[in-house]
Each structure stands twice: as structure tokens, then as C-alpha cells.
Image 1 (cartoon, one colour):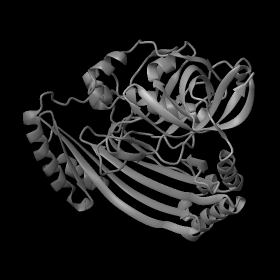
Image 2 (tube, rainbow, N blue to C red):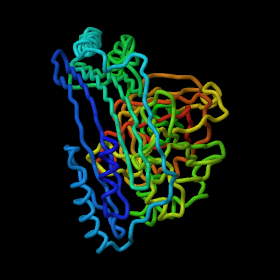
Image 3 (cartoon, rainbow, N blue to C red):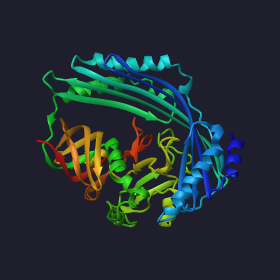
Image 4 (tube, one colour):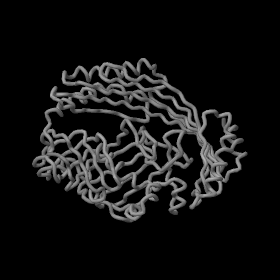
Amino acid sequence: MRQTIKQAIAGSTADYTEIRIERRWLNRVLFQREKLETLESATELGGVVRCLKNGGWGISVFNDTSKIAEHIREATQMAAVVGETASQPVILADVPTVQDEVRVELEHDFRNVPLREKVDLTLSYNTLIMKESDKIVSTQVQYVDRFSEITYANSEGTYLVQELPDITMMLGAAASDGKGDIQQGMEYVGKAGGFEWVQGMEDQARMAAQRAVAMLNAKPVPGGQHTVLLDPRLAGVFIHEAFGHFCEADFLFKNPRLAEIMALGNEFGPPELQVIDAGFFAGERGNVPYDDEGVKRAKTTLVKNGHLHSLLHSRETAAKMGAQPTGNARAVSYEHEPIVRMRNTYIENGPISFDDMIKDVERGIYALDAYGGQTEFEQFSFSAAYAYEIVNGEIGDLVRNVVLSGNLFETMRSIDAIGNDRVISGGVGGCGKGGQFPLPVTVGAPHIRIRNVTIGGK
């Protein structure tokens, strides 16, 4: 394969040529109630050629690796046409050439586990959830494993082979009071690791069911302005979804007003606030040894001492903005071109313990985990999976319908305490952007406290 790729690139007439070939193995098992809804086992091989000619990109996707040279010619022809009409020619920032092979060793390699065993494990968790209470009316228990071998080469001399494992288990339960009220509970794990990560989750399965049932008796949260403590999972999702995407440099080109707001040096929070996007956290889903432009991973400090310090870049955005590539050009599969994406994005530890953070809150909300959310430029809305009242420095009753909303930048400046108990979480889905979903990422944070957060409710 290596010689074939090198020969094809050598024959290219483009100004720049790159090839990315992915071989992927996938297994997926999904139970809903007693029914096995999905059972999938597949392998896939495909690639993409991207050529730059006269400042324009041309792309050709393929599954037949014997015809790479033809796809290079096709991509070059398209690039030349694009270059003729481009108002701003594409320029790529310089990066070192690399020759490397990154292989992984898994403690319990899921590729060696029979599909029958994966089905039985998923079924066992589903059965535990169903048996936990007669109020459980539905389940969604899903196992997924993926293993990708990605070969990348470009006309500058870089040649890489890297392996990326990914395994997730979602344990979802829905409970009903029989009168139309349905509540959910969920536990999950997502790792760049082996089969051992999804074993032994019986307690989590029961916990998901118990939480769904408990939520039926939770009282609605009172609407209004509240002091809110976010647990590490929800705080991690918040910093990824509401802030991290604004740090992706390609996003700023489309919005001049936002580009002004996101100028380096602008203040976004207290001096204790540090936000990082890192290429490596052992065993986590956002790990990328090299991005999909062959750039080696690095640690990028997005917010330093409360001020915007850096952005995330591809080679193209780095050249446009006079910055250095950060290793954040990622594609969800060979069918897509790389765009600027996050990896392991987290809030760094602060100085305060959880007990000290909560003790001086007279009345507030302790919000945990996330069931999803949306952002519209700087406006955000996130639903906590569950929450508790805080009364006179103590955790109180379970509450529900906790939807946090507001202006991102005002909310970040309202952070007044950052905990010292950071947790990193891989989740089970992935990040979506530009039609590319789900891209494995990792989020993380310690507990954080925010004043005057708007929460919808009664």
C-alpha cells in the first residue's frame, strides 16, 4: 500500500496532494425493552484524495484503492476550476514532515470478543433495568465498538499509519407513573480502550433505572435566577458546546462580530479559569496522535487566567490568521474533508473543594450531567439530566425540568468558584459540526459555581 500511495502522489500535477485511507471495523448492539432492535457487524475500506491547485481545493472519495492515481487526477481537475474563481486562494501553514506508525495495545481487545458475548452483555444490562421496577416502561441499552486504521500521506513527504479504538456503552431507562408522566435515567461510559471498560456495569444499570423512577416524584424546579453548581460532566459539556466551538478558527470567518468578541486577550472569566484542548489523555476518546492533516497532537491553552489565549487551527486557518497549526483538523470518516474540531477539551482544576463551594450557598441548584442542549451564537440552552436543591449549604430534594439558559459570555464571567476535582468523560455519542457526526471527543471539568443563571421552571 505504501509504495502504491507514494507512486500515485509522485505522479500528481497538483500544487499539494494528500491521501487518507481508512479501514474500519464496527459492531453495534441495541436493545429497546425486550427487543433486539439493532445488531450490526461491518468492515469498511475507503479513502479520500484532497488536492490543492491554484489556491483551490478538489476532493475525490473512493473505495477502490487500486485507482488512487485516477482520483488524484479527478481532484486536481476540480481544484483547478475552484482555484480559477477563488476570491481568496488557500494557503497552508508549514508543518514538519513526519514518518510514523502508531499502534495500540488493548488490555482486552474487543476485536477478539465474539459478537454473541457482546449481545449477551448488553442483554444482561437491559434485563437488569427492566426488572428494577414495574414503572420502567422502556429501555435503550446500546453497545458500540469501532476500530480504525488510518493511513495518511501527502506530497510534502509525510507518511503515517495510526490506530484508533473506540468503545461505548449506554444504559438508558424510561419510567412512567401511568398518568402520562415519563422520566428518564441514564448512565454511560465511553473510552479509547478495551472490552474491560464495558464490563461490570451492573450497578450503573440499576442506577439508571432507579433515577428514572425517582424523577417521577421530583418536584419541578422554580424558574428564575439561581446560583448553580455544575457537576464535572455538565460543566464539561457546557465548556465544549457553548464555548469550545467558538474557539474553532474556521467558525470565526463566518461571523465578523463573533471574531471581534473572540479576539485574543479578551476576558472571559475569573483569573482561576483555565480551559485546555489537549491531544492526549490516556484511554480517552478524544485522543488523536496526529490529526487528519498529519499534524502532531499538542496541548492548546484556550483560556489562560480568564483571558482568551489561543484558538484551534487547521493548516489553512493557521495560515489565514498568522498562527501555528494545533493538530485540530479532524474528519469523522474518510468520506469527509478535515475541518477544525476539538479533541479532549476541559476546564482545569481550580483551588476550591466541593464542600467549600457549596457551604455558603443559601439557596441554589446542583445540576448534574446533560441530556443535550443547543447554542445560537452566544445564546445557550442546556438541560440537566437531574438536579437537587441546595438549601443552606446542604444538598436538598431532587428537582427536575432544569433547563439552564443565557448568554455564554455573561455566564462565563459569572463563574465565581472552580473546584479541585476535575473529571474527564468520553460520553457515548460524539460531536457534530458541518454535517460530520459523531466525532469521538472528550470533555471534562471540576465542579464550577455560577451566579445568576436563568433556569426555566414553574
